[in-house]
Amino acid sequence: MVEGVVQVRRTAAVAAAAMLAFLAGCSGDDARGGGGSPEPAADAPPAQVALAVADGSADVSPVVPLEVSVTDGELAEVTVVDGEGTAVPGSLTDSAENPGAEVFVPEAPLAYGTSYTLTATAENADDEEAEAAATFTTVTPETLSTPSIGPLDGMVVGVGMPIRVYFDDPVADKAAVESRLRVTSSNPTDGSWNWFSDSEVHFRPSQYWPPNTDVTLDADLYGVDFGAGVWGEKNRAVSFSIGAKHVSVVDTATHIMEVYDGDQLVQTFPISAGSPDNPSYNGAHVVTEMNRDRIMDSSTYGVPVDSPEGYRTPVEYAVRISDSGEFVHAAPWSVAQQGNTNVSHGCINMSTERAAWFFNFSRPGDIVEIRNSSAGDLRSDIYDWVIPWDQWRAGSALK
Image (tube, rainbow, N blue to C red; front, side, top):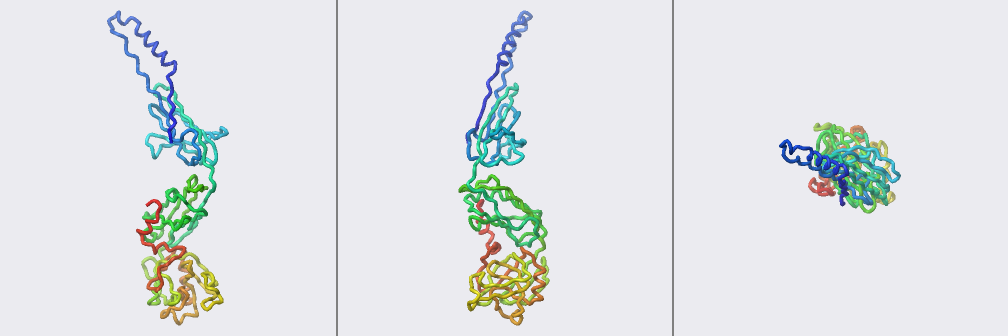
């Protein structure tokens, strides 16, 4: 935008100073052999004030930096008032983008659809004032959007839980949004965002989260243009913790599940995985849900209950590991096959006693890695760890 610059004119004080210098030159110094009159002091150059927001600007983001630059002088005062003349409280801070400039930071963000006037005054070395002012109007969005975020604030989750951000409206400018999603952790990790669709983006490190780590997502989206008339409605912050490392490995070829607490193997369970007609998916599954009692209903994934492959069966200790109908759960009817044959519809079957132990051991975000299945790789609501790291990073809008 074109910067607004105002340059002050010299006042009558300059002329008065020149007259005094002239009178001093006629005071008789020549008669005492003092030589000619001294040269008058040079006038200080007038201060110049530049505003980053041009006068008359419209559709301005309410979080636009209200930056002020001064040359040949020092900034004396900055004010912001709304269209009704009410002052906006705020303070000045150094500009991160423009060394030497200062930014007026309102105590509360400017509102959408509102007129404001920014006025800045500076003084040069002769205390002469210069002023610049710009009146601008913030944008009136067609749609305001606030995303949903998982995990929820305050949760303790397993080492495999990604951060998931869901938007009600498609995000046209993914880079603008992603740049305002900042993740920090108490144990530094690498990490990257990956856009699964125009309305869903996930964050994960290259490896599972370090255990016992505190993580915070600051989604500073107020005033951000998502594109296509959609703007961020408000800022959100979510903090959660990573608990102990629980990774269980299911080998469908040996019909065994090994359960690790950290690096220690704590249980080896015989299991029955998905049958050849309904094989379990390969890859790292993330625990998302815990059900002490649950009705397993084939219609939830498109198989009618009254069809030859349909079922509606109550089960205990159901630990969901995908939205493709895969659970680790008690299956007392298949104990004879557990450890030797895969007979389930894709779930990991265990005895009731073993399933109860695993249920009490598990939490959302734990990992169950399934191997050696005839099925392809997992495709689910969370299949983040199946995606190779280079491919994952390529899914960022800021790559």
